[in-house]
Length: 488
Image (tube, rainbow, N blue to C red; front, side):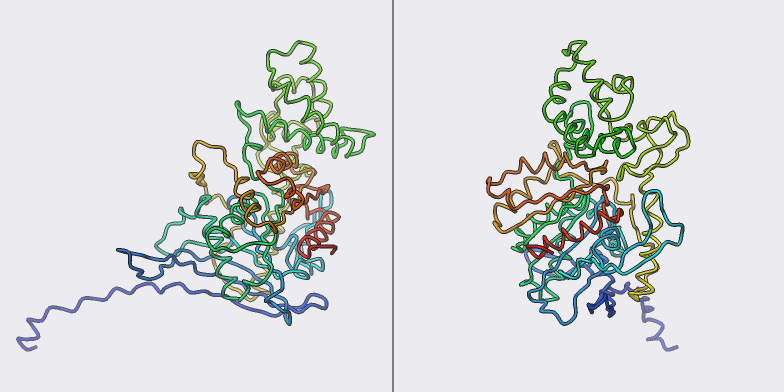
């Protein structure tokens, strides 16, 4: 070695930078009866614009969101409707709307009293909304295969504001890359997905000037004050009462009466009498209280002693635990038709929802098989159907005020006089009761004539009403009619 070489400092080992994430979308061809369509699934990389000292310095990858898109072949895509769909949670993937109701393939799992054993099944969905609209199913960050990119935190996406912005960016990217700005555009959300959908309707208009043709609110919640039980909020006790009565009717506790008759009585009582009863409190006379106890017990199917013990106020999980205690059964929260066993029958709240216990297995099996075997997409990450990893969910935008996006939907409807709203409710949905969304929509700050752009549809099923075959068929027709603007 020469003297010069000895004096030369050793070369520093170069640190290998991780490869920048890229879209990993896969496209396959399929048929559904006479329809030919393409399915594209995988992950889209979301990037953030970086501006330093007022200078644009590039795009930084922030997250990879999993999507599955279906487009009809040989169609005029510039004019064909497209529907962007997602579920809620927060923490839910889009698997439920995807493989339960809208997509070209659907889960076969049976229903109450006739649930199939593992490994369940998957079949063509001939009532798919794909017949009338292209479809894009979106999994928010930390659900499905969606993740924050390496080195980035997921927490900024785990809240109302970050969630809205990231899902909106997927919609913008897909619309732009597929030349669909001139297509009629719809968004469909279920449960918390309706909260997201209402926020998106306003956000897409104000951020990207993307106006929608319609919003589908399935098992909706826009105002959480209608659902959140507390000592200082009597509203949920009113909005849940008709659902309690419907569930009691389903389980035979209103013999000789029809469901509509029971609902009419419960809804009337909840609107006219029950508010005064709760507001009067200890000012009620003994006779007034006794009458209220008797009426609530008769409507809900629980004992007068229980109604009296909870001070005329039945919190929903406690009610679903109490209703069939005499049979040593608990009732499903998201679908009150379902029942299940528990570890003991003296507890105040059930240990798990019998409905979720029934559907998680079939949907997990179907999705994990479907994406690899039929859509040719391979990813070794676990597909997060319904995860708690997004919690605590941030509602920082609503600190010190009631969490409600009704004002955002109203603003979107005022700005866009062509925006139509479809509301779908299950009578046995004990998570998002129909009376709650009726209460919210009736108070939207929109002109009186704008209410004509809102339609309600009801089903004798629960939160995921498409688990019930008759409801699935009816709901498929209703969504098709909404998207086409007329009869399906």
